[in-house]
Image (cartoon, rainbow, N blue to C red):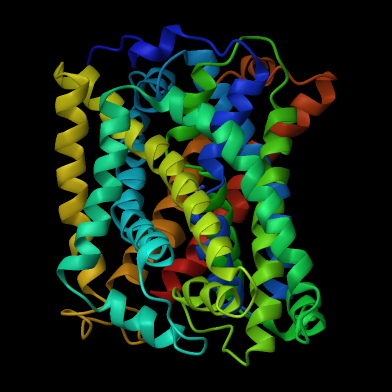
Length: 451
Ligand code: PFF
């Protein structure tokens, strides 16, 4: 297979570290920080989950992020070509497929949830207000629809495809430069409001006081590790491709730590807004994927100026979702352009259509196909999410850490990270060689046992 530098953008380098950080953070901060983080924390016992999450972030997330950046930078190619190049001539090159399948599967159902966000934005902007107390019913009614949720999903995917087809992602990034700080400010303001609620201390305790008994449950580890992969955007090809745009020589642990820190801060802020409200309103923290979509509108319905806050919040979340979706779609599109020599527009729209169709069952799983559930009561969207996040991502992470740790000459790999002092680079290599495979294998085993 021809292994040329992949995307045409491979020739562009980020002029400043700031541009790279913004792009990587824009891709990391998305629905995962608000929607997924809150519902997974809620389902897995709060503080115990958070503790495992933070450990997994430092022990697995940051080293793997450095590894993906280093691979992309050293190979100067997007993910599939980069992996194939490192694994040239060995059967390991086939693992590159996983970095194509994973982002595609994630994008298929991510776009369904992004469609919910857009619908809420429209409702808060133009719709008649939903009364306080009615938002759980309103959410269920909305997601149970057939055509309408599909239409919102298609609009979000269409906007993403248009951005990727016309290469305006730089424009979105610039938009992000303004909107991300705004999202941070808005979350901060909402946090101050949350601090006045009766349930604030219970919310804090839920998030920060681990229920030690929960630590005995394997599912907490599976969920926490999966959320680290999802939230940082690991094992989806994205960060390898981002690495290929980086100038040589700079140390990669700093941006990796900064991204992990910023991403976690966003998730914690969302949690600190959502959980106090959950307890103040007497809602169930473990109610599943609808959590943020019920709790936040209930808050907006009760505070002065809440409607405007709702519009601002869902607008910012829509943009956060779009930047994440654009990084995901870029992976299969960049590969397809190079492999089949089709135009960027053809590749973008063909993938949009395919991923829309793949996402249709996830959407219908809340309505027409709601009887399709596993023994634990999980519907289609949750099952796709579990397949991607609990299995595919850790599996790809395991294979990537083996490839990067063992197939790459150790000295070159350590040098490729640009980390100094040298012992720190070697420590990183030791983690990638031994700790990551061990941890990922154990957690993956636990995930498979749960199937
Ligand atoms: N990290 C994103 C989120 O938390 O919403 C999801 C994601 C976006 C993963 C983009 C990967 C990616 F390339």
